Image (cartoon, rainbow, N blue to C red):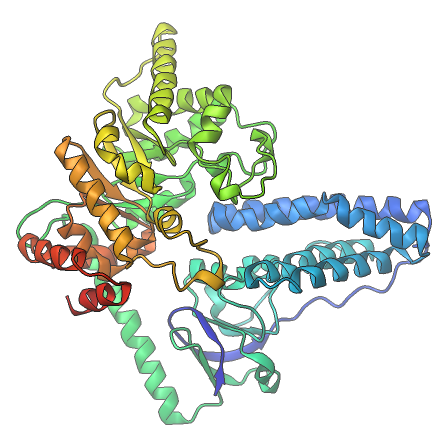
Length: 566
C-alpha cells in the first residue's frame, strides 16, 4: 500500500495510466547565441502566451475563474523581466544556446521558489517549470498544444502533473489522480477537487513500482493507494464506491422539493456561480436562485476592462435564465490574489490587507459605474440583487450606494427601464463588518456572510498556507460568534442574512447555521442537494438548541465534536 495525501475525496478503482507526454523535438538548428536566437525566443514566448490564453478560456468555461487564474498567472510569468534578464545573460554573457539558457533560467527560478520555507510558494515552482517546458517545445518546433488522451477510464499516474496538464485532462475518462509529488495546495489538488475526481498526491517513489494497466484502488479520503489488490479487497472498495454513487443518485430526488425544514420554515438554498456557463448545473439541481454571481471572470485576461454591453449581455443571460428566481450579482471583487492589469492594482507586499474588494471598485469609479449600469439594465429581465464585497466600514457602503443611485438616475434620464426595488446588500467578510452589523443593517437590504474570508481575517490565517492550516477552521468559536452577532443584528433591523462561503456546503454545519437564524444558504451546484437533504431533516426548535449549545463552547475541538453528534 502507498501512503500519500488525500486531497480530493472518494474511491476510485481502475487501471493505472501513465501520461503519455509528447516526445521532445530534436534541437532546432541555427539556435546559436546570437540576437537572432533571442528573436526566435521572443516569438516562442508570444506563441506560448496565446496557447495559455486559449487554455485559460477553457478552464474558465469548464472549471471557473479561480482555475482560469492559474493560467493567467502563467501568462504573467512570460512577462516577468527577471526571467528574460536571466536568459539574456545566459546567451549574451555566457554564450549558451538560447534553449539551454532558457532551461537554466527556469531551473534556477524554480529552485529558488522551492528553497523557501513555505510549501505553498514552493509548489508554485511547478508553474514556472510548466511555462518553461511550453516555451521550449515551441522553440524546438513542436506543433500545437500537447493533447492528453485516454483510451479508457483510468487512474492517471504521474510523478508530477503540470497545472496546464491537469486542466486538460478529459474529465469523463479520469477515475482518479495519483502523483508522487505535490501537496494539498498544489494546483493538481485544487483542480481535482473542482472536477470531483478522487486524488492522492505526494505518494513518493512507490509510484515508480506501478505497472501500466495495473489495477489500483485509490482512496481519496484516507490518502492511500493499493496496487494489485486481492479480490476481496477489490470487492470491498468497489462496494464502497457503489454505495457512495448510489447515495449521490438518491439525493437527486431532493431537487424538486421545496426548501423547508420539517416544521415548515423556509430557507432559500441557492448556488454560487462564476459565469453564465454555470447556470444549467444550477437549474438541474433545483436551486432557489443565485446567492453569489462572481463577476471577476469578465475582467480576467482583459485590458482594457470589459465594455458595458459585454457585461450587460453576460448578466442578462443569467438573470433571464433564472427568472423569476433571484440573482445576487456581486460587484467586482478583485485584488488580493486576483490582480487584474485592466484595473491597475499594483503589486503589494500584503495584498489581502491592501487594495481589494470594494476598495478597488471605489478606487476605479468609472469602471465601477460601468458595471453598475450594466447590472441595473438587467433588472427588467428578472429579479436581481446587488452586493458589494468586503465592506469594512459604513462610509464605504454609503459611497457605493451613492454611486449606485447616481447611475440609476442617469439611466432613468436616458429613458431606460430600471427596477427601483432592487435590493442592495453587502458581504460580511471582515470582523469590523460583523461588529458594526447593526449600523450597516440599517442602510442595506441584506447581508451575505463570506465565511472563507471571515475565517481568514478573524483568525489571521491565510487559507492557502499549509503552515497555519491548523488555525483555519469554520468550527472556531470566534468565527461562529461573529456569525451569531451578524444574524442577530440583521434581524433586529429587519433584514435577512445568507451565507455563501464553503462553510455553507459542510453538511455538519447546516443545523448550526439554521439554528443561528441564517435565512439563505448558497453553495456550489455540486453541494446543493446534500445541503438540502440536511435542511429538510432539520426542526427549528432542535437546531436552535444546537446553536445555543455550540455558541457556549470554548474550543474548536468541542464545537466540532458537538456538531458531529448532532
